[in-house]
Image 1 (cartoon, rainbow, N blue to C red):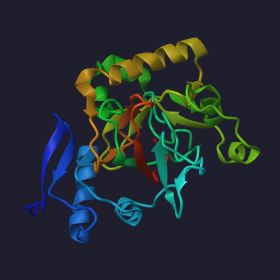
Image 2 (tube, helix red, strand yellow; image 1 turned 90 degrees about the horizontal axis):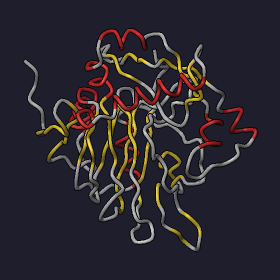
Image 3 (cartoon, one colour; image 1 turned 135 degrees about the vertical axis):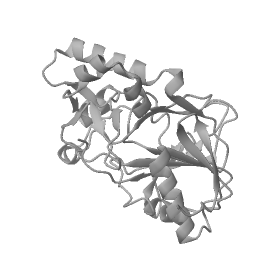
Image 4 (tube, rainbow, N blue to C red; image 1 turned 180 degrees about the vertical axis):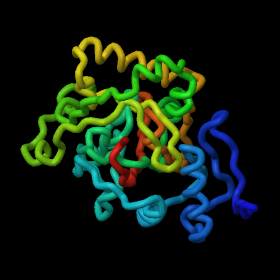
Length: 284
């Protein structure tokens, strides 16, 4: 018989994700923290509300999932805490303290790396009263719901991911990479259908922005197929929409989901989020 969980949970949406109740992450005991991590692996995403997390608390929490991953762009990392990346439209002395409108468009984080990040966690420091939602698409459920012949047609397809392509074509904050950044971020190939290393479940694994093409396909046909796969994955039945409150901690598994942010009135509201990544492994 499995031991009783030290906390209660409720689904974020039917069949996907869990909100963990009555856990204070800043003071959580190590055994309870292990159960929180286990809950994440079981459900694909976890939410904990009403948290008060200092930077050291965030790093401690993230480290329970694995080794924190560094950030390709480091100018917006939190001073003294390079593991924490700031997402914000706030200006201090006329300069931005974080990346603004980062993460808009369906994608999975660090897909341009040979070993993309396992999970992403966001902590809400300040949130707008409207807009700025985070949407998570369950790509395992999307794969399972696809007709068998369509799944078979996708097996073996390999996506060409390119950080240089992403930074040159994205809608917000385009930038020219330095020679060092180009050297550190060579193009990579990943499967369109990914196997989850924990239990073997299959997931569709497309991503907007970083994908430059599909090996062996003409460019127009490749992007038409990619658009179709993303449209399938992001149907309402597969998507959880998170409405942020200050103190929320949301963690999702990049190996079996897509995510996007939504825009907000950045002239009226200030948003500040702290993001951490955990190292993953090579998709197969």
